[in-house]
Length: 286
Ligand SMILES: O=C/C=C/C(C(=O)O)=C(/O)C(=O)O
Ligand SMILES: [Fe+2]
Image 1 (tube, rainbow, N blue to C red):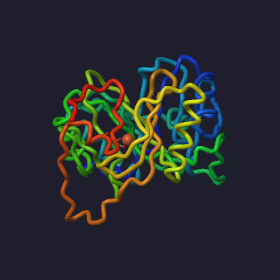
Image 2 (image 1 turned 30 degrees about the horizontal axis):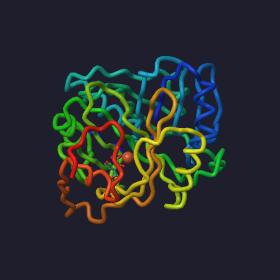
Image 3 (image 1 turned 180 degrees about the vertical axis):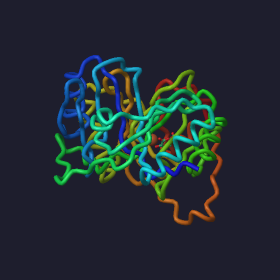
Image 4 (image 1 turned 60 degrees about the vertical axis):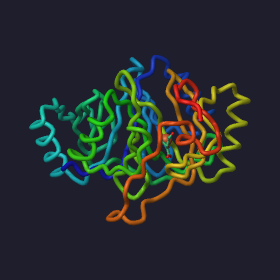
């Protein structure tokens, strides 16, 4: 079984790196951690980078997950290969661009680009926000799924993800004690559905609501509270239509051995217990 330790980074293609930098620094609140020929590195916590914009097609979206060591990476490559996933062994140059020791790339059953990485770099300097959004770190991703039941099996049986809760057939899955690191969202094609950063307090969520409204950044969901993880949240859209989430207060699963996923109905109250509705998502009314 592939043992994922944590989500490590997201790589997003963008035709306009200047616009991406502007948004990431003045709206989202990330710190520039350097740039390469066609790469813009951004930090949100102690890691050397957690988001990298690369010049190019915005449909090129990749999520990196950390595995324990080189042996685990090689085992993962064999497992995926045996299951018929084409596995790309990252070159030294590609690993350097990702600030990791080594990595492999493959696609999940929906076709999402996934990378497994060994020894992602941390920085000796603390994260210093470009605006005071209260960010404490990159925490989870929503991944598109053309078949959530099939993809849940991939993440939980081929990998070590465990389902913390389900909304309809959407699983929220953890790879460590945090309620979820991967949320699957039904969609017609592969892609990253949203990128979550944790913030320090509910005040930060609400402060950002007013701040982003002022900046004319489209708010797509919230402010609200998820009954699943208990988090207070705000979702807004960034360059190339990517959705970003701030949230605070995500539960931790106290007892790994006894936790049973709760089943929530596919209805508005399961997404927000305060009554906010996700823009553009067809949900029955309650
Ligand atoms: O709308 C449901 C979202 C649930 C949560 C949560 O429980 O925190 C997310 O953050 C998510 O799915 O990303
Ligand atoms: Fe989320």
